[in-house]
Amino acid sequence: MNFADLKLTRQFLNAIGEAGYESPTPIQIQAIPPIRSGQDVVGIAQTGTGKTAAFLLPILQLLKFAQGESPRCIILAPTKELVVQIFNEAIKFASYTDLRIVAFYGGVGPKRQIESVADGVDMIISTPGRFLEIYSKGFVSTKKIKHVVLDEADRMMDMGFMPQLRNIQEVIPSKRQNLLFSATFPPRVEKLSEEFLLWPTRIEVTPESTPVETVEQFKLALPNLRTKIAFIEWYIQNHLNEERLLIFTRKKEEAENLSKFLQRSFDFGVRSIHSNKGQNSRINAMNEFREGTIQILIATDVASRGIDVPETSMVINASVPSDPHDYIHRIGRTGRAFQHGTALTLYDPSERFALERIESLAQQKLIDFNDPPVLEAFETPRFEKQQQARKIDRELKKRDPNYQGAFHEKKSKGSRKRRR
Ligand code: AMP
Image (cartoon, rainbow, N blue to C red; front, side, top):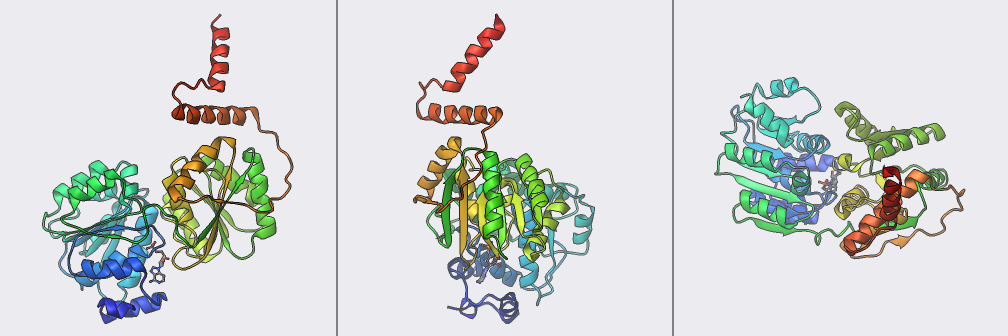
């Protein structure tokens, strides 16, 4: 099967050739024909499967050439990074057409974005909030919209965008083509798809929440954050050659501290991205990572969705995400498209429960990291010990509501003392 078999026209085949794609991925083979023929489609596919091209190519072909002033297609995505990533792909594929494509996202003032649609636009790629903001000020009309794409629908719902999606649905014409893409398909996304789509064709490229098969997944138990950092340092020193390394932390402070620490210890370019960083700084860091100017990128989950660097071959989870779906997304950053990747999850005693949830969702046990180094023994600081104990208590309580946590007992004794 090649792209020409999918009845894409010459101008898109040229652009695909220039992008270096040789053959379509399974989601592209399945999704391009029904989308091209105007059907509503639900695509359950993780990032890394080629889903962006799967919806962009047929829609761009349907839009054909620049026409009128108002947009005919809107693509909604949860984060600025993802919007920019879709935008870059769209520009690439549309390079042999005169289609006008713009991106709207928050974090920067809307002025330039408003100006970009003033002379007419065919496709808008936007976060839900920013689109509504510009729409409500009257700078963009929705009357001509014929194609709507909800990308990473599960994430949009997790981030609380449901009211905005409903508002947008109310102001776009009801006769339109709808596409919904999601990495997972829990009941709430199913409900959203029922609200938005009409008799959709359902396409699923991997069973729900199965991590990309090209990623080898390891785990390593370590007692505390300081030891995890020592391990990461050891790993970089002994194993990192040319490849790109992506490190995930749960909190932005951890990302920031780790980034400073690694910058001091190594010559490799290191940057961090999280919600406290400005829009431009996040996009710059990602571009530098993509180009290879920086080799190590540290990110929190909020920033993880937009990271699209196919060269990333290693992901280290410095902490275990409590939602196993976040894990799937994190490791989906490596082994993208057809490349091979490795993921390593470092977990402290309180994170073993979250790790079990991941193993149960992924339906496989992670492999024990072989030959871990002998690291200096760092004591777990009192504060971290308490945090771990609290977390273990919470987890055990979830399993057994009658469980009286060791930490809570101590705490209540302490508070009695204070009251006396
Ligand atoms: P996505 O799942 O859309 O985030 O795409 C993941 C990565 O795969 C991106 O870097 C794409 O540029 C790349 N890609 C998409 N389709 C193909 C293809 N048919 N052949 C090679 N790479 C592709």
